[in-house]
Structures are given as C-alpha cells and as structure tokens.
Image (tube, rainbow, N blue to C red; front, side, top):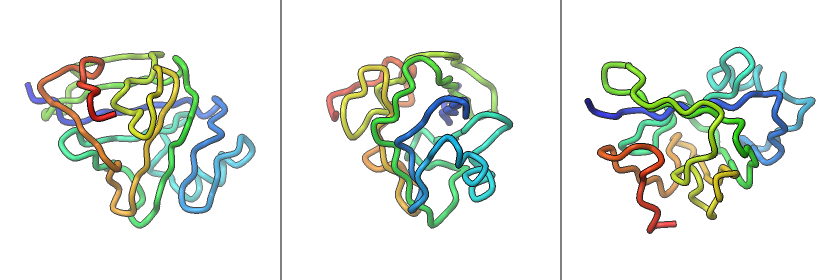
Length: 142
C-alpha cells in the first residue's frame, strides 16, 4: 500500500475567517461567492482540498490562483483522510485535530491550518514522509 493523497474536509458552516484565495477573503456571507468562483474546492457543504503527498500539489486547486490558509482555527472540526494509489481510504480521521503537517508557517498546536498555496497549486515548503501515518509525520522542519 502506498499513501498517495491527503483529503482535507472542512465544514463550510465553520467560521473560517483567515482563508483567502487571490484577493477574495473568506467571510461567512461570501461562501456562495467562493463556491461560484472555486467550485472544485467544494463538495456539498464542505470545503475540500485534495493534496498529493509526494509534492504537496493540491489537485483540485484552481490553477493560477494563490491561496493563504493563515491561522485558520479549526480545532477538531476538520476531517482528514489518507487515500492510497488505488483510491482506497487507508487512514480516516473524522472530527480530528489539525495534523501538524498542515501547520507549515507556524506551529498550529492541533488547532490551526498554517500554509500557503502558490499559483501552480503547490503548498509552499511541503514535506511528507509517505512511509508514516498522518499524525506520525516528523516536525523538525517547522
């Protein structure tokens, strides 16, 4: 089994005040604008990121868009799934604390997403050891 993707699922009814894509900042009353402009990032009432573990490419990202996930406080409202090369879920963390691998800019303490996505759709400074489980990732680079 080879771990291939990390699927991050965030309920849209959660106040996500520090997400921005290009110049559009996330406000609770602008969810419809986000859904219209970035439909690939939504699945029903959830905001979804599909991250390729090998290089941090967000495969459902809108190319050419720059993203900032800075001090996005989720506590234990997000869900995280590791998907293998066959498309099977091999790790399932529903309603879990934010894994430290998603706190790149600053330490997230299990509560915060802290990363940037560049115009090519890659998470800046991404590092992931595909031989280890999501919550067993080394943190020496943070």
